Length: 312
Image 1 (tube, rainbow, N blue to C red):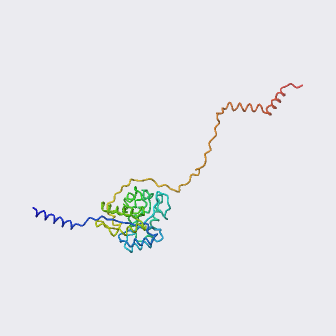
Image 2 (spheres, rainbow, N blue to C red; image 1 turned 180 degrees about the horizontal axis):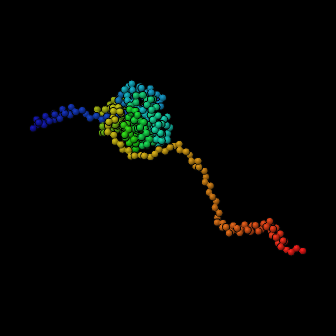
């Protein structure tokens, strides 16, 4: 019996060694490429599995997209979309009230400016991505290209997955923002959170920016990943299970260029009312009195009375 137990333990150990350790997949995307080549070049020196997202109208967009591709990195278009907050916007920022033709023009222009792109994610965009009608126009335009959509999830009730239904456009979602602050300790904590989510759920996508603090943390931590975590391209997660937790938002976008009300701000003239009603009988009595007391009427009365006297 003892010998049998020993054989069982040895067999179990051999089986455990023969089965590969389950690996969580972690994708990291660095946004806002195209403005700071010096810092961005440090990102491109990192492992090729790191993905980068390039702003199409940035001054170094084409240069950095080409460099990233040549270094083996996946390239995404980082397309500006309207936020709910009021702040300066990039050129050609997508807005919910734009026509389908205008959205198609902007996306086509972005594709031409960011070579080698395999996907597209939103820069800001809480107002745009929360509009079902706006995102339906985006997905219809994207369906003309071989591009997937990475939802940066700048708002919880994003309509991206719902809008993509039936278009053939695949949607994946960001789980962690690495650098809401530029404190290295905070960025490190967010990186560890992304690792834990990848381990728990099988995969996770983290988004960061080419800030010096973010670059330093990535240089430290990407080369020391736990053995059960594999760094992958964002585009390799297209077939991972995605859960749509949004609720339908079918509010029609407002048109900010609606014609101004020409009467807005004009004071209304209120009619002045007499304190008491004026009745017709009183009106005619006053007229009669005024006429009878007039000089003309008195003259006519005197003449009429003189005509009635006998002539001598």
